[in-house]
Image 1 (cartoon, rainbow, N blue to C red):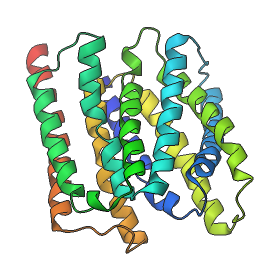
Image 2 (cartoon, rainbow, N blue to C red; image 1 turned 90 degrees about the horizontal axis):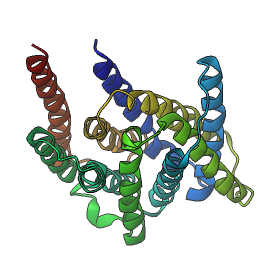
Image 3 (cartoon, one colour; image 1 turned 90 degrees about the vertical axis):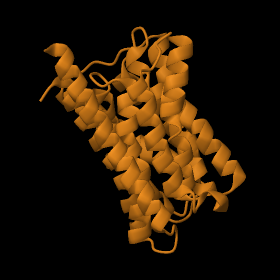
Length: 284
């Protein structure tokens, strides 16, 4: 397995962990700010332990700070949006990120995307739109707008490795610290601290944020930004499926959505297969 393939696998695992967000957030009767403060505080501890065990040192410069701000914005915007609109709406609008990756890369880094990248984006997003077309009309406008803005900040997170002096893991760590500091005061306003609430919060902090960002940070070191964002496009398929299975009635999944799921998965797999074949030909 090549370094890029390992990186792609780590990004895939990150998308699995991220997909736990919908079901866990819907199960916590707190505000979005309180939920985000609690989950990121736990995630900071998880990431600190990981960095100590792997002897990784934190770095800090203006690009890492910018990345941290974008990570914090993505966390906060998505958590708040998830409480103001449906889980499906929040996910699909955030996952306009690959489009913003292409646009921002072209504008600021003068890198033109290839035909394969553009074709894959078109296929994946046609699937995402298809998957959520039945639920887009049901969400709150404010939540939808916040989720869309989170797509812009999430795109920058994917681009961290291409920024001069960037360090995705350091940016993620400092970004979670920012999120925790901002969100923790909101927890003191909450009154429900039952078992379900606390278990859901623990899952969010350890897996949906902590392990997810560790996998994403390591994966981005060897995975191109567009590839990483496309692979992570599996999350918007898994997230509402889990909500529908474990919290029936919250988000209904219809035939059109299932067709969209097939398109998204097929698009991601097809893109990576074609990309691997093209690189093999170049290497030969």
